[in-house]
Length: 461
Ligand code: AMP
Ligand code: ZN
Picture (cartoon, rainbow, N blue to C red):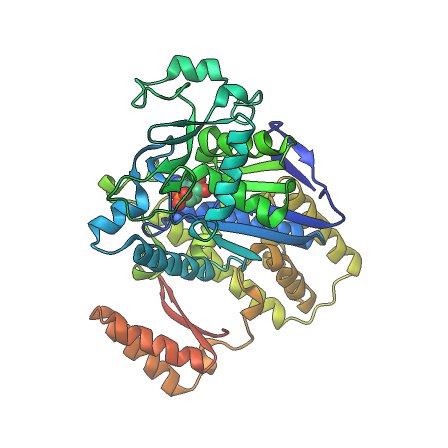
């Protein structure tokens, strides 16, 4: 299997360091507001990667962090802590904000059928590990104290810039007027911040009360759960030049070895051809998608339109197209389920190989989907094709195995009455009643899907 490594800037053959166990770390959400569909594209890519690894027979130990402290408004240590600002605006405590948005995050990723990760760790639960890391860096001469905190001295780390290809000299030339003139180099970053009196999130340290910098949490927690060296680290491309460069400087500075073998980054989602921004009102969430009648899985399917290293442009028309295609795919699975053709095993194996070659070529899902559509459109309806599509779905994660051989017109009349009642509730924007009916149907082992053609009912969880 080949994966593109941002570190070497080329596709490399992937092998785990130890036997067939892959140790992987993914930068998780900063839980100060709802995740938008751009964030979620990055987690769908992460999920596809772990599913492809498992499809290849590897076992996966996968860690994701929850940033509930220390992520300042700018990635380069300027401005307020995002959690604290959000808490003030919403008149809640930062802990309440973190708990609420962490819950929503897990609901979102479950709705997108992102597999449950082996380890989920919160930054606030690992302050001791972070302090130990910072103390180690200071003892080794990589950290220094100034009036507002402990900073990392980037000029001490020889490899600084190796991930992004931006040298320290280039950074110096492009640096803005430095707000913190005690720093030795503009790229030096905070490992630990001293907390001003009014700062709510604070912990004791040998430098007095304070809170951790954002970058240190990933170095400390990945080391705790995966060891000094591990196989894969993922994130979005925006993390390459600062966050991940800083993680490398911290981990390799302290440990003296290359900590991560493969750095893998997902490209951005654009909306209507541009950046998502609050002022444009286009930072859509899963809730927005659902309110417009789309299934979260249709968004997952939409993400298959582009390779993970290409930008993807979101439009509502595009999502509508994805929903229609997903429905067609389900119909295709159903048609094969009812088929009786016998297909030569050799042909099945060849299709399986084509699919495997595509996903193993740096997760080429658009190419793998061409194999899928070839099977869906095959006129020889066969249960073997249905089983093959369900096997591929271990990677795609579209719940194709839940497409059962029961069609709309086979349901009892009272089921349709419930569907109609729910439709009416939705028209009246009575979301509570609509959700209650959905839950009732769920208890009966039925799933209702809102498609642009109206609601559809099928057996499933
Ligand atoms: P944050 O919660 O801000 O730390 O971001 C969570 C993840 O979403 C990170 O891995 C980011 O790289 C990623 N991300 C942010 N914006 C986008 C976007 N427009 N498209 C894809 N990924 C994004
Ligand atoms: Zn991180």
